[in-house]
Image 1 (cartoon, helix red, strand yellow):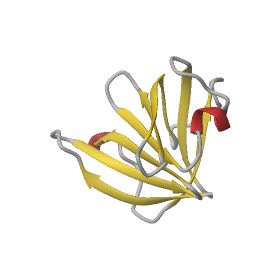
Image 2: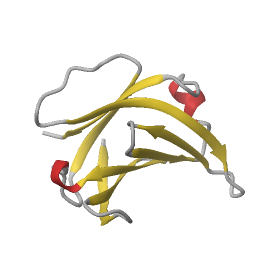
Image 3: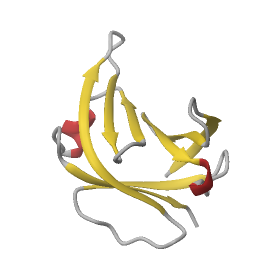
Image 4: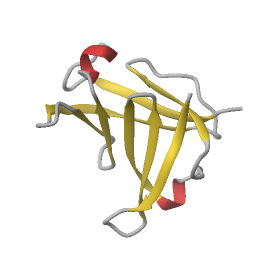
Length: 116
């Protein structure tokens, strides 16, 4: 179970940054404001997979490529996934790619579903 931690205005016009927290992992998603369906504090489920998941019009789903992963000075790993423009930044205390069984340039699907 994850939670929408915040929804902030991005640097570009009509761009939002949706922060989703799942235990020790934080996802910061670039979201075009007209596509945003989430509210601050809402409970959600996150899916990141190499296989296309089943989804409905009530879910946010995107596909793209793992671009890079870097270890910051404080030991935090930052993984970047590009959805052909919008980015997903994943911050974690461990090697996220290793944990998820992913590599740089893997094609992935990312979905956020509202919890029922």
